[in-house]
Image (cartoon, rainbow, N blue to C red; front, side, top):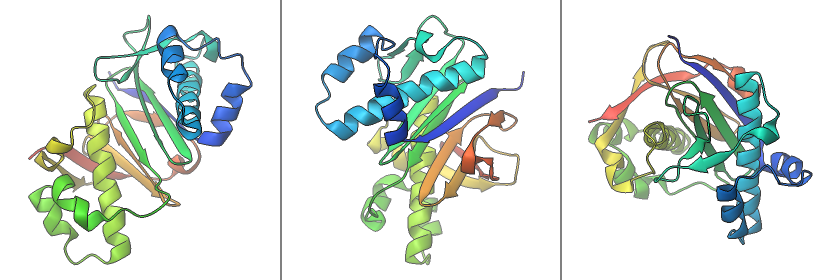
Length: 225
């Protein structure tokens, strides 16, 4: 059976504002407990935006149920789960002003990076890149190298999420990313307007996206070295 995927991307401020206009009674006990312990305004907005967007994505994917009727929890690694619907798989990510949610009928992982300022990629590279990736980065100009760094980073973080695991920094260099021909590989990447979004899914998965995700992605294979 071909994997079906719905991906929703939205500005954090817009999505959080929509969530705040509700009574927040749609939050599950698990989510309400987490929100109650978030003191930073931006972090609270990111949490509410992600979990409200997740419900919209679930409703769009399932074609039924109002967004408020879905209930979310988390597994032992902190990955989101859909209560009462073990056949649905959910992945969430946020960065600065953007939040993304992916829903599927099979395991999936999504990650987004929209940094407000550039990271020192050269300092981080030995921890993030495999040996082959380090060689690939050699000779790239500053702009291309930074774009390459975010592509590798998002691919690897999305890979961990697709396995229901949290990011393990000590394991990043043991993963390798490789560019693939169109339609091949277990990952896709969209890069536009300073935003990098990576999706881990089967090569034949049918993806319904929005906005700039309607553009063609690049294709990748992610796995252990």
